[in-house]
Image (cartoon, rainbow, N blue to C red; front, side, top):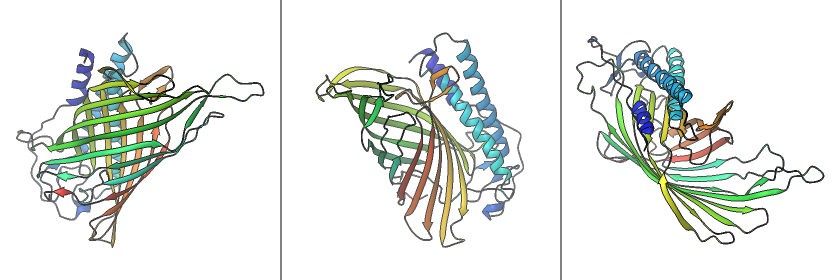
Length: 400
């Protein structure tokens, strides 16, 4: 890990905590719609922490703009920029934090009677199946649909600690085809490379609730914080066939060790950041065989993930026979693992992709299981839409 990467990690993970004078305690009604007005400090029913949404969002915006400005300034002044530069992570974190605070402001203003924590807050479903639509706008190219299957149970170890293991697989439903850019007589393009991709992933997310108010007599109602750890392992396998020659295997093994925090900016808004190193090892085969050979191992780019989430209640549980809740999720991922990202003018390959996603959870009153639907779009040079269908089962371990 270079000094530059460590500096970026420190800037990302330590946003700071503000402090203010004592604010008089206030008794709030238990009706959730009036529990947390947007412009006043509040204590949400069934949640002992108090938060001032407007102050918390302003603090998030200030920190995010600082990250964005620092990233751009050092990025522009540096002379060693390359793909996956960790300074791009500062820019990405700043974009997500600033956008989240702005959208959260409008969401708060559109809910003048306030907000409270949803009893059935959306998380990753226990079992999900997803489809990544294929297709390409390039003439004669072919990109197949992709299928993803994942298992993500939620385990509550105690009142302060939650663990969510993960196992998943993603596979192309066919072979992709890239064309030779040199046109043949008649204007047709011949296929230059076909490939088939498979990805296997496993890991977990561990969340530890930090005692509030962090030993301060009276913080500025900035919302509670969770410390998080996300060890992750990925095995990517790609079978290549250049033209009509023999097939060849290229594999990539990646091990992540990301640490981070989740900031509950308001009862329905959260900002999450992960930062950590990644260890890579390549495998490959000789042309004409699929028998893998181990290549050298090395540290990859600094991994960074920034995520902002907003809970949206449609039909609260108990008021109707069916509960319907939604969640808007905006995320930036910086890893330079597969080359996916977005470009700005002449700045090509430095920034990772941005994912926008909306999930909807439907649960019958009294039912231990729920249906969860999701639709997303990846903003990247080769991004596109995705759809998922999931089944939610009860949380294992200790009850809250």
